[in-house]
Length: 294
Image (cartoon, rainbow, N blue to C red; front, side, top):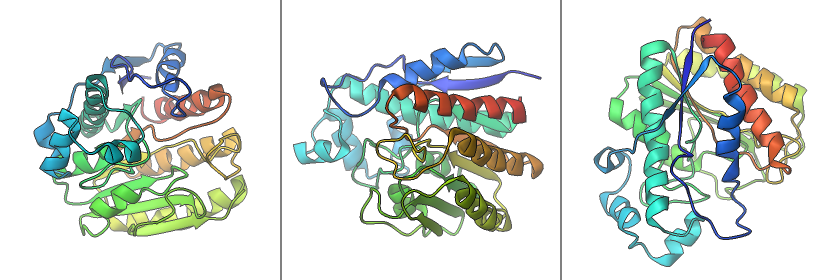
């Protein structure tokens, strides 16, 4: 079995005030855990070119983020205080997904230990998301047919707003009906779940609706593999087990492999307490990718 390259962003620190609820430590913890597997190669993600980011975002918004000139309310909505380090980390997160996209086109699988910033809209950020990395990658490559499989517990509202009406993109979002964002956008296919859904119902529903993606005939899949559907997640409101999440990932990966569709996997959310449950779940996703694509 060969090597799998993973791009990471924890070399660009994101300073946050004490008590901030964003689990920034999970990124380094995840890479440290995955480093126990010698078949992974870790590559520091490059900084995305701001000109590429403007393919998916308003140039004035991009400039306001880079220069820190957006109104303070805009940064409060994002959830991160502005700093030069925040800018570099944000550019790195987008750059990791762009690099993973090139890797997927070359080898069949691309993975980034960051990204999945699906709450970022054309001219504003939200929910710890500044720039929408998946939309940027899709706009850069101008794919004839691309699919976004977003299985993060929160609807990919920014992705839906940016890409949902694009006939060349199929956006699928599985998410909690009663969870953030409370004003949902329209994806090509939205599948909302009631609170406390467990493995059997979730996986049955995934097998029911995933064929809609394959009927679309994508040439590439972007997989938002958030692990905040775990029953231990403090923001998730669903009740999946680690085994259920791993079966979820297996269904997606094996479906892509069987159809020879390159897949780009981005990290997405995870807010379990303790954070180790999130790290283990993320690690299981990439370990399974190694099994399927290595």
